[in-house]
Image (cartoon, rainbow, N blue to C red; front, side, top):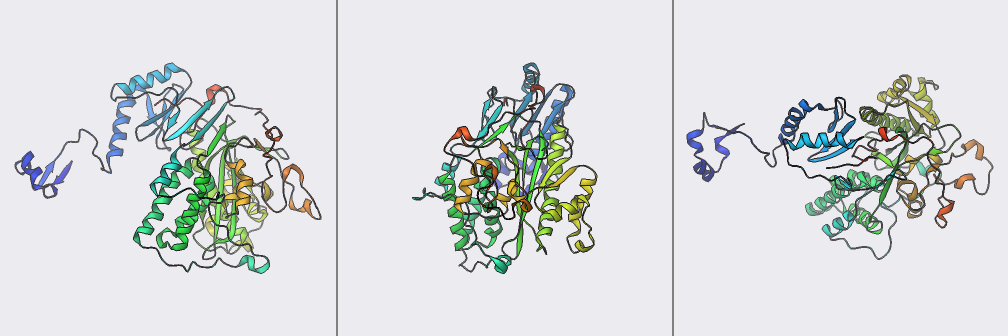
Length: 487
């Protein structure tokens, strides 16, 4: 490595006699250990690891960074910095990997596999499920920002917009006219977003929509933005230790896609998608649920002209993300059928399936029609379903506290969390209906209401096609699996 002599302090130059060793004003260095803060350190370490593991038959897969497999052994592992998460079928194959690594590195082994990337893993091999959580993380962040637990419970992570009816429902949201924060205030907002984002991505997905809105305001944070950040911390203090549960499944990717029109400032629209692993849904039968492996939520960069265009944009973005997830699952050894995509807009679903003529849709963003090509190639199967059974609706807008309480068991594990999502009736079937709808649905809000007083009433039906021991695999992009993860 060549470095200019001029950047070294004089005492370093004198101590190591660099003036005598310099050539044309440069000093040549040999790197024998990692240098803290060196941007190239990760690449250099990765190349060295490839060189050392190649003779033993281990290789990094072509398209998924950090995922490694063996030429013939039934073993794979993920590598995040210096943490190895290993999925194996027989212990002798795991011993082979450990012995190979010990030839070059000093290892600390954890055969219980109860901690990976800061995430606590609680395995239940008899009932075949995995609980993940990050106990104590929220308390540390509250102490870091000096935020005290609120005297009154906060069940909404972000303040919901006031409801409007009639023509006013299509009006853009009012602009924030409160005073700007100083540099320290802006920095605090950015630190809160960064600290909560990791926890939200890994565990508590219910905060993602609020975080997305906060992130869009952080560059020009105001007093109102600070109030929203404090409300988010109040919500986390009220619900400090969330848990996500993954059940063994057929490892078929399911995507629920949704959008909300004109739900953000400057007449923008929000899009979202929820990704989970289960089985191919069957018509008129409940949907087999599982913990989310990924939740996508964001704001469209430009103003769309209709709700149908916003929904088509959501399909476009979710299918883009879905192609990456499909590739990861296939490189893990789980072949994917056409990925079922839930959509609650008949126009967007019709455009994706080619059943709606596009002559009058030419004003829509051209790139959105890429979804039609993907459906034609049988990569995705876009299907229309009522919005009440769309799990992504929760991440497209801000709700009041009552709704957050009602739907929380659908997204995070609680004693009352259901295993199956009943099918909702189509809107045409509900004309003139009065009273309670079947399966716990309510006409004015999505998802059925979960009974919380009597756990025996909650459906906990067993899976009918669980994956075999040889095909248990990683349950998420972040190392969630159904096998032990020794370090």
